[in-house]
Length: 445
Ligand SMILES: Nc1ncnc2c1ncn2[C@@H]1O[C@H](COP(=O)(O)OP(=O)(O)OP(=O)(O)O)[C@@H](O)[C@H]1O
Ligand SMILES: [Mg+2]
Image 1 (cartoon, helix red, strand yellow):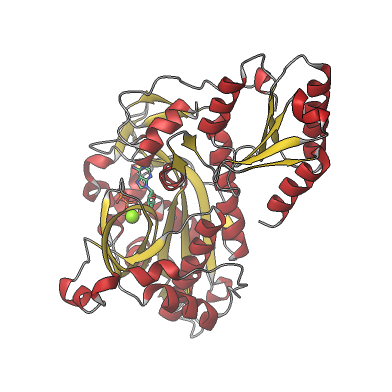
Image 2 (tube, protein in one colour):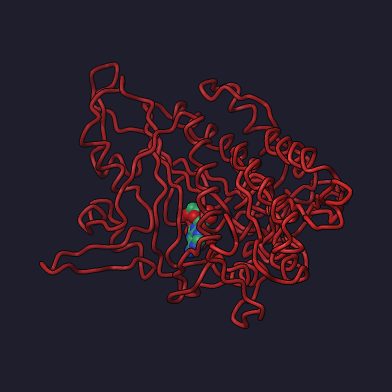
């Protein structure tokens, strides 16, 4: 992309309504625009990162064997009357009446709808296990939408639902989700710690929330500092293996890590004092096992091996896709702007031409631009007729992890400058070596 042809409305002023850094930076970097309280347009740069995050979520869900589909945003109230949640859900549910007077709602979650799909088609235990998921907009009429996309009213969520014959299989699905979630967050360059949590209106016994540590987080968290040393890394996990998934679950959840809802002061006391941490966190996902809560009331049964109708064991699992952008920025920024982790950056590299109109500088930039494209990487070329300072400020605020600066002086010596947004360190390299360096960084991801 050439910046002169892009739509990147970077703001000079810091918007006064934004209370936390991620919200401020998303507005300043021209990523989002608020259209109503808690409802946003995703401008091109924000949309690009949203799609990257979504893509990683899709890839990791499918690697775990989960099957994508797409359910609508609008739902009929009748399904929710069946489960009893139409009355229980309260004011967070946006209720709509269509022209025929039928009660509809903008889905805050999809347990009822997926259970309806399941019961309409699946008859036998032989069709299990099954996990279906989608990435779809949700609406919750939050009392206090705030912090930009962190607590929106309309927000994008990945929600997945497992259907199993036995409790043991459903607990395997739970563990499988836990592993796939950790992998998902790590690929984005984020550490999200699974913490024992409270189940809330979804209901159920087993649940973990995934929290990204950040001072601006809305949850108070208590944990053993040693949990932050546990990483999944590039380990290959066999998602079909109950033992392998269980082992990872144990590894990540044995140390003390809880949100305020389930915090147990006496248990926390047992953590060595120097490792006890009280901090704040952003909830970026949650997994639940709730057994037959929905399958029994909604008649989602299969014929078991003994020929008898058996209600299926279920769980539901969510990732806050749009909230993740806020969490990513809270965890990756400095006073100049965003610093995208390579896994989610909207463009792989920025090219800054210090002397637009200079034949040699223009030519070198064009050549770099074409080489990156040929390698399947996306460069953002600042080809505007602007002063260097303004170009650097734009690159800094939008946070591309790598920048190549091209100017007549360097070109005389056959070099360009490669700068890391994170460390600020620069290196003079020939254009060929600069390309090779950046290509390798992305190839190694
Ligand atoms: N209002 C919201 N805006 C943005 N993301 C949200 C919002 N509510 C929930 N999410 C995201 O969707 C994920 C799955 O939804 P879940 O039902 O667990 O939310 P929740 O526990 O009600 O969230 P919270 O406690 O933050 O209100 C959450 O972990 C969170 O990342
Ligand atoms: Mg939750």
